[in-house]
Amino acid sequence: MNRRATLTLVVAMLVASACASTASAQAYCALRDPAGQIARVFPGTRYRSVVRTVSAQARQAVARQLPPFTLHFNELGRHTLYVCYNRVDGRPAGLVHVRPERNRRGIMEVLWALDANLTVIDFRFQRCRNRQRRTLESDAFKRQLRGKTLPQLRALLTPDGQKLKAGTGLEVPAAAADLAIAVLRCGMKTIAVTSEVWPDIVRNLKSQSEVTRQVGHTGPTRQVAVPYSPTVKALLDKRLIGKPATLDRKATQAYQLFDQQGRSAGFAIKTAWLGPPQLTLWWSIAADGKLTRVQPTSKWPDAEYPLAFNALVGRKLEDFKNCQTAAELAALEVLCVHAGVIQ
Image (cartoon, rainbow, N blue to C red; front, side):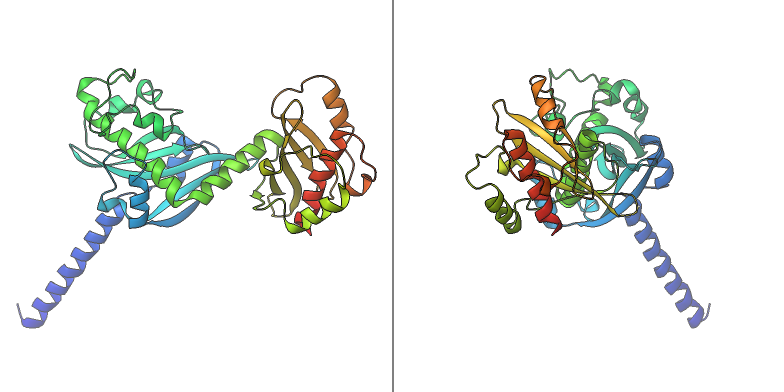
């Protein structure tokens, strides 16, 4: 073989080696066939992907939430979170994330499906050479993890995270115990990483889920960072001179609502009624500023309350000239929040 041919062969081998290394590095934590895999855990949904870097700083933050085990080097770098929505009405369905974890048979990859509160909905092995994987893939085992939060998963392990904790009620065959420990550790890391690296995504999904549940809005939402802006406070000072407070302003949350085309669809405002009795109320306001609904998160205390609040439906800010009742004062304040945000 001449010198040029030898050099060409060496270069080709180096390139192939580099490509193989890159492919190997990218293989871990990559969701293969996203549409197919997401459809298995969240049927009838669409999704968007959000790619971010799991940094050394994130690693330290994650470590503070976990027993004395942390992320290994394969878990750092750029990773993808999949945010899933109902295909028909746009309601948030949950989150999908894949993370690797070491076990006695090497590195496995687990797909985790989480809800807006970062509790476990489901998990699936994407890669696992352990023969006990079928035991843990059974519905009998998965039922024991569904609905659990990070602290609840952590409670299933000993304080050092190395063994299953006795007396928790978790049923696992002895032969599958090591793999179960790895799965629990992986689930805890997944929840911790998601909360640290994508906190805004989690927060928005959680607020959108709550708005959907409370007021029935299924499109996108955006939480207002400061409901009582200087503009709102000026409006309230002008309109509520000498009037008693009816709402706990520290507890007020305001959300702008949008349709699927991104157009304004009104507001939803959550308030704490000072009472007595104390109530959490959700107010719906149309895009034209008209109050459309007032609903408590629990039952009304008695029949007088729905009569008083339902009488406010259909009114706008300019309709409140001379407020007399506590319900009217609360409605005036909510509409001032709305008016201040849109100005």
